[in-house]
Length: 365
Ligand code: BMA
Image (tube, rainbow, N blue to C red; front, side, top):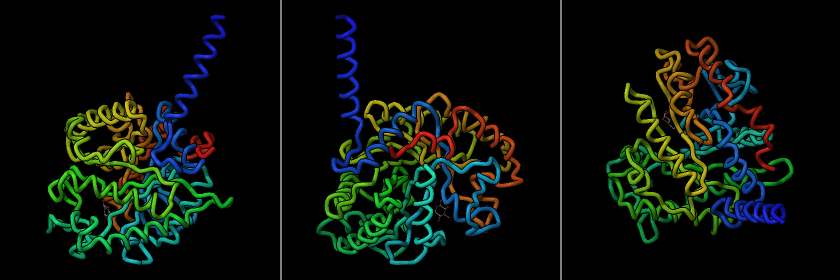
């Protein structure tokens, strides 16, 4: 009897759990639900490594099929590949980082086929001034693109371009490829037109809600997981100040770069707060962007990044791009980089996960 009761309780618990562990989109595709659940499980098992623009270019090379600076160093691809849509909204053929969108589509398909994870950022132009994402000359931009605003129609056209792009992301079996979409990031800072000093709390939340509702309900896109991603913050209250709602956000994340000796302490605090929020809210947690002075601090991978993040359950940590024109600005190592040996140690550490290990987990099944 005791055993029977125990078995029934277990079955009930498991079924309640699997009902609550779902992405926010009630119509999310099966593969998107699977990815969400698998990301949730995996974040208690290891920390995936990600790299922005891992496949299009690296130190001294551009568009070499199969190449990745990270793979050149450790033998495997990053588990997470980051992509950028800035300038797609203008109808351009390539991004603000000069990567062709049709190639990005193909790489997203390749990463998915190889069992990896794709995440997309969007440094979209300023719809009010026509300037870049960094044009903070007006505090009226967000209000101007919301319904009733003078640039609402233009913003809708921007979203249409994003929708069109997302709807091209199909696997060979015709199913949509789930991706993590991370717009309006680093808004706890004020360097983008959607940043903290550039719009009200309500307008920032409304921008999010409008965007999600347009892509999900109007454009019928159901293969996106939405990531809320701040920059540096000190407290839980500060982190959640502009959080648009549990009903539209799937991932809680933050960007934080190593710009001085305070970095490990700040990273620890942010990782601790975000991993706790993720666990309480049943969301995925991540360090959505980072990067350190790896040319000088050659043991940054193990001694700074891994040591700080090890105690926390976070899904991934993604380092920013390796611009081919400027090797000094590389955030990932490349062949012959002074931090390569340390990166291999980071790669070999049981906590970190790269593409092969993640492929074995069948994230979309
Ligand atoms: C920034 C820099 C820029 C780039 C932008 C969008 O952090 O890397 O060179 O254009 O991200 O990817």
